[in-house]
Image 1 (cartoon, rainbow, N blue to C red):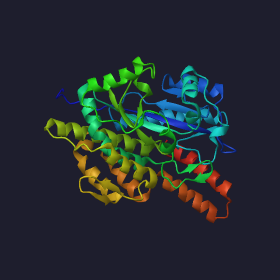
Image 2: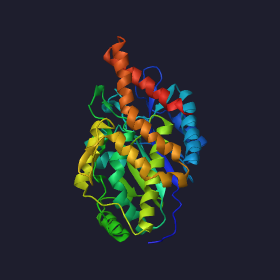
Image 3: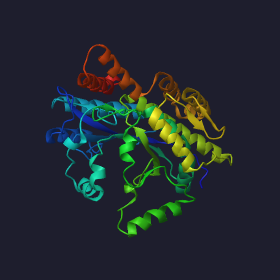
Image 4: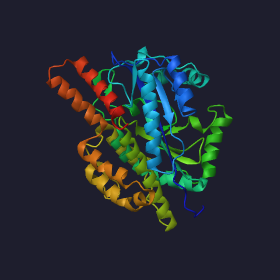
Length: 377
């Protein structure tokens, strides 16, 4: 394992839903819009599984400041072109009221194969996520850091939750997206791996059997990327506001550097069984930031704002070295004031209190999500 300091570059991928500006319901992306986005964004834009979804990806960024410029350009470009077609993008992991049964999958070979292979499970995949890549060139180090970094996945999930509604009802969950995604195979927390060779042998076993083509069909919450020399965090809901996405990226980057720093001192974060981490994953999915997570070392449930205070202190040196102190510090605000799911519920509640019926109040939530998408641009 190399002792040279990694670059810790970052890249962010976000999936968006497209809504009709008048009805606020999901809408298919017209061909003209897709062509205009693809031509303008030159390889940083693509369709997604459903025709009402799109995906963007930043270039490789040295840090959060570069990523902000990238995301601002990508989000504003998509919003501008969508508006020309009477549409608006929203960055929420589930649409508050549209029905998955009314959506159609994108006609591309990759998505046709998914549709055929995964049958009814994939038809409900009306969800969007955010993936954060952190550059780690050394393969052995990638595996070692994945084993340790997964402890913090529930913390990132809780901050990101943006999917409380599903098909017109409040699910009671802060993140309903994972309830849908976890029905797919090869999802959830990554298994503990002892080496890069073990990871490759596991993937090759499925490839040789013709079950999957490559590791891109392994959809763990955290994985060595199939395309880049990175660790790819996939657990987060997509963030309605750009600045929240940057906070999640900054935390992912800082946590990765903190764990690398420990390794250089011949130390490491304690590795816990997935059974225990999964309990925190569920608590984050269910409660978001409103209830605590289990401190597995102390064996007690700790209020989430306190956990985030401790986490920010833990990576303070790393955030300073990476130039993302402000973005990491913002995690405290989310922990104390509520995540995007909490905000959506508040909008719904205010609309109902003002006399709106259920459907109108859900429409108010969509309007709020449109505003949030544009807020930091």
